Length: 267
Image (cartoon, rainbow, N blue to C red):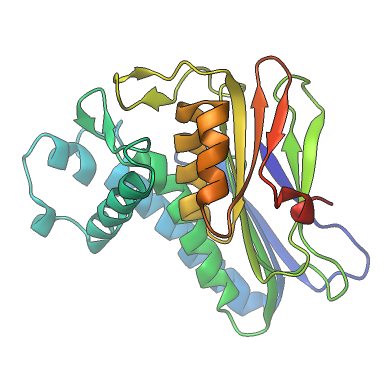
């Protein structure tokens, strides 16, 4: 679980909003720009999230994803976003050597990439609004950030300690970069929901949480899931091999393992 922090009397004009969708809460914090233009773009982004939920929901019998999984329709009959997401998921599966998968107990289910992708897409759209200097979008604890909340201060994201409710395991800073994403996968919030693609069953590893830091939330979300399924040793080694990606892994034995470059992002 992560939360972007940005409070200051010197902050530019801020537009904030919280929206319940996809079974979680999406929190928006947009700095700078004309408030009317920002709110119009925000309304469009929120509508886009609800549309994504309609298309990709595994709980709606008539969603495009459900109908596609039942082979009632083919990809040509789906929205273009379906093709985009499935292509991205296929790339995630390739890069992770199958540890990230779109199959859940034998059924097509790309929801492991949908939330990160939708948060990133919404944040990018808001960052393109004229005059906007900073954007943070938090979808259920996974955060995509652009720019900065103030000229002299960066976005910061607190990473919840899964073994100490209410405590923080680390604070990530976006200082020095124009875009940064933070995603966490683990068992603290939702229990054993991460699947081992080799068995089709819940992943049994020594980990309780994996946090991945990188430029894009689409990938950070996938990599956190894949690394968790791998376990701490293999997961850490794999994250080290990914360019521009850092990770923080916490084991059930309260051991913290980090990639070599994570220290530069702590603060």
